[in-house]
Length: 214
Image: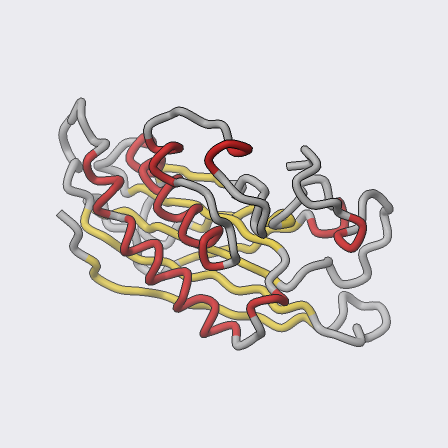
């Protein structure tokens, strides 16, 4: 059921946005896997079994993205995920990425919860998880699109979604993908604040872990 045709990686280093050069440049990266959509062209009422089959894909992509960004793990400050479904599929097929993609990044960054509880829909993070890292929900977006479609993947802080200076997005486009019977699954991460952020709000360095700010 899992047939990966190609993997596309992009990493950018941002030194300035027409202001002073940043002392530490922002690094943003995204990785996308182009897979055959086994449900293309038909309605399948039970698509959930594919979610668990995508777990190793998520883990592999999360590790590949971190390696491509070439920064220490502790510098990863934001994350996000997304999916582009080919025209013969439906939007719901992109939603299969929520657990495999999101929890792969969270576990890489130190989250210690029980992803099975989330798959089953019994969510109580204070009971199933342990104080650690990557406590925030992973923001997400998805759409049905043609080959070459772009997707703006949202990025927010890994521990508190309210860190305003780290609200961001990365534009992802895999040339020629997805074909009508394919899905592009995407993970994205960055090292933190937008270059020249200056609109106030909660700062990442002031986050009290496990304080409900997720």
